[in-house]
Image 1: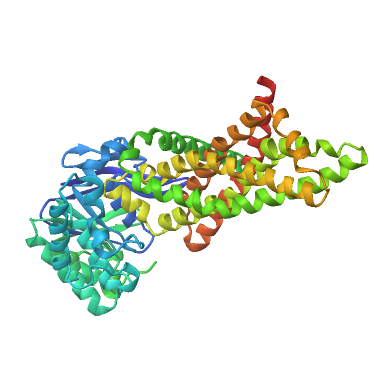
Image 2: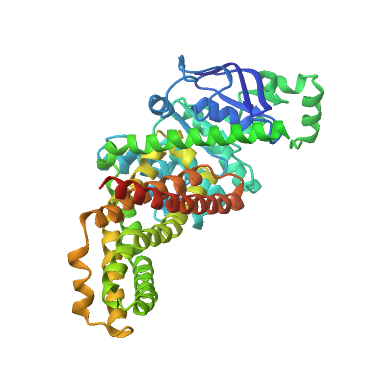
Length: 244
Length: 256
């Protein structure tokens, strides 16, 4: 379980997040919806301890990570998998090397087990036959699937998606959303999806938090979003894709 | 105006603080070298073997040029037999290491800045951290150690090439007997001449690697941001190499 408790974040004079409180339960898919540049990706980085809050606390499985040293954070981060918006694949490595990289780096596993886990993710992501290709030779949707496979390879409790369908064509977007939905059956994995596309929320999320002007204005099950009378939520429900 | 200056000063000191922490971390992760020995070997090849051509070009050009110019000057005083002494001191103590430092700042530093900057803007460095790998240990420490080790033989190679090109020019341009040239080199070279020259190699290695890597890690703002951080890394490390060149010479010569 991940919990943000009264988290605020400032960059210089600019206040990005104001007193944000959020809980992400295990085995649920939670979306964080908001317009571009509102601080959604920042929330994911806070959950991983990649940045520290100006005030407030971030708990991962009951442990406050907001004041932890970088070296103490590494084992906690391995409980979560992260799919970056631009995928962040290592462009000089093949797909199978990308998938196996962090296992070789961080876990003292026998090579045979690493190969088995890589093969498992290749199959899960439907990338058979592309194992020895470089990321640049794959389509955007395939690269995203590699990134998801890489995030799953540690067998995390929670997986964090930063704009998983941004920039993808409708067919690839659908494949990615199907893949995310199938995570429910994948070791009871929980997920956080940061997005500005409201259809993604209705397609995969069990619950949703709406971030607006640095604060949470809605946090409930997805079905109740349409009943909200907040003017911003009413406007996004009619526009579907959020723009500032 | 005053507020703007205060903000800039605050920003400068914050950057210095971050650079200090970054540098300490790069040294503190050195015990992990056994884990990253492949990265170390890759970087050793890049900053060592691959840098040989540029180091040879700069050493040969500076050795030849010094021999011609200093030889012309000494000829006016009838002291051409001192050519070996004059050029060897310049090559070994000062210009050889300095030019090598500047060349490596341009070559090795720019590569570090661009490569790490590209990794930073494509979130690959964040990905390393997110999946539990220390990016400084993985990306910076092997570069630092490789530079610390490889800059020493490169300095020796630079000295060797610089001196031999000077000897060649002495013989073929100034028609000085090679025996006279080398006789004025070897017996007069003191230990401090080598200490001055070789002490610069690790200092330059630290400056070039840490400054360029730090700027790569700090890159932001897309591809133009990578360009800016790479240029900044080269300019700052080259400036610091010039300053360090002076102070290493001063400190060693005053204490030996």
